[in-house]
Amino acid sequence: MNLGRAKTILIFAFIGLNLFLGYQLFWPDFGRLTQVAVTSEELAATEDALNENNYYLDTSLDRAVQTSDFLTVSPYWDTKEDTIKRFEANAIRVDETEDATYYNLPGINAVAHSSGLIQIFFDPGLSLEEELSDLDESDLNDLVEQFLSDEEILPDGALFDYLDREDDDVTVLYYKQMLEDKPIFASQLKAVIQANHLQKVEIYWLKPIERIPEREMEVIPANEALNNLANTLGPSTEERSINDIRLGYFSGEYDAEKWEIPPVWRIELDGKQHHYINAFTGNMEQEKTVSEKLPDEEDN
Image 1: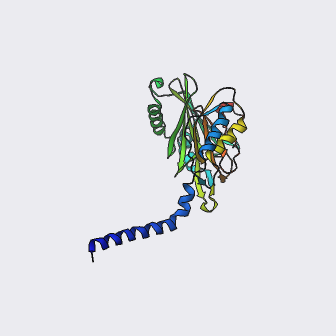
Image 2: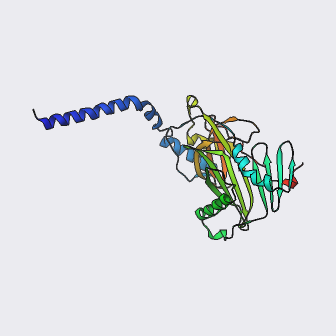
Image 3: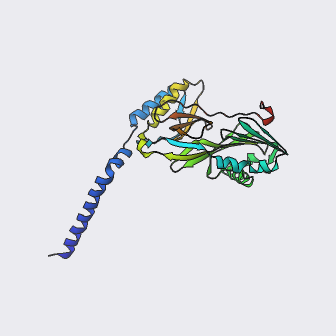
């Protein structure tokens, strides 16, 4: 008997057995997740419908079938407590209401809301000591991120999200929280810079508590989210660019111990405006809003 040939036959038989077992174990999930949820024809139809309403797709879409679950969260009280320690220790005046605590320090006013939102106002502002107009987005982020870390007001795990230059004098940087494979858009740090000075920081950070695999479901495809956005907003009077669409979690602010937040498709328009489409229902989620008032402008 030819031993070399026998060995070759045994090797191929072994490989075939492994492929068969792998197919049996993993194919149901693999086949589902690699299915195309959006066909070329459907994508083309979506683009045509968007263009008719003056929206233009300027990014690629993930066309595969995707799944997600609900996420249970609570306000991240440790982040809030760590951030306001310096204010509690150095405040020259502390005012309390049912919904917020106000700290007044030399050059700083801070508000800790019962919902978990923290607002820090610097007057006249903290100098960044660099000409921001000379920096690109990456360098500006590095500068601000280091500055926030030095001031001990950058939450652990915060990642740069996007930048908005509102005008020649005002720049706003946004940071997000990541949970394994998905961003939590509901968690956000917002840093407002004017005339090379950090003027305001707003922090709303959440603590992920539980994901329930048994409740994992297939989400609507990205093109359906785009169709729903255009139908909800209606035709635009000017050209709008769709720069990004990605899956994550989002909810408004709740004054509660914990709650569930759904998966959403976040759609970015013109590089700065964001809309959230519920990835299960297809409905637009209410955008989060926070108070823009200074502490001494609030009704105490």
